[in-house]
Image 1: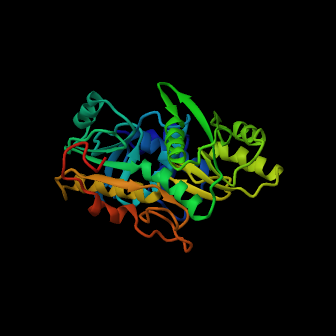
Image 2 (image 1 turned 90 degrees about the vertical axis):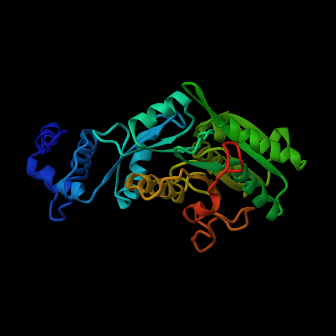
Image 3 (image 1 turned 90 degrees about the horizontal axis):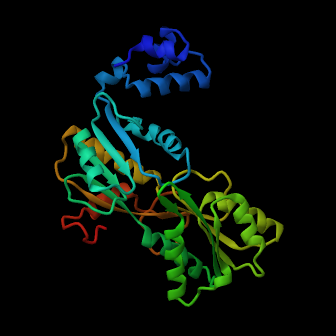
Length: 338
């Protein structure tokens, strides 16, 4: 295991600076760049301060299948680190010398899952289809996510509904296709589907702008597939002076440009629940594997499922964390917990 001298040498600073940064000395004055470099190197090397060792920090590896655009793994790690720290967990994208648990997001084969179980005693899978209850799992209720969007539009008296989407290809995965197909089915079932209002391009700002600008008539409500496409749609709506109501599908990160409503798939409550679950198993507080079903969160209180829906005061009516007890599935893989 690396020591302070190794970290100091690799970062080009003194051992004293490394020690004070990692021990969170409030009197130390260093730039954010230096602080982040030291913290990143310590995380990479699996180094723990004496205080961390005394406090019983748990080492959890975050494993991600190709789910989004390049660079999202590092961005997600940065987003989750403060939440993990509160739970006494140190996260990394690579194995530690001693890995206490693994959180794996996405689809993995049975061989990959077996490898995870050999690597760490505790495993939590997020959005993997199968479960044999030898490990924990969390599932996002995607079907209800799409239904929340349609229900919101209908509750607002909006029946002219469109979809502006994007497709992104990454290695063997295709991102964006499934969410479009599900919303198409919902619109068609209610007799609301119109081909000219359901348009697809690439998952980027220029595509969103072009798709909206090419519409002869703009619908009253638009469901947008992702934040990058939404930037272009918002710009085009302003140019065409349209007041169409928009809802943007957003998987992971806070939107930099926001207009209308947001359908957040992975809220902070989902991640807090995941971290609490992996810590429970690592501490030996629980033996039974749990399967938790979490709803997406629409930033309004008029959706079909109130769990996870943010009201006008900014509070959550029923967080995923309190939803765990209601969502434990004692049955076989393939039961309602899926």
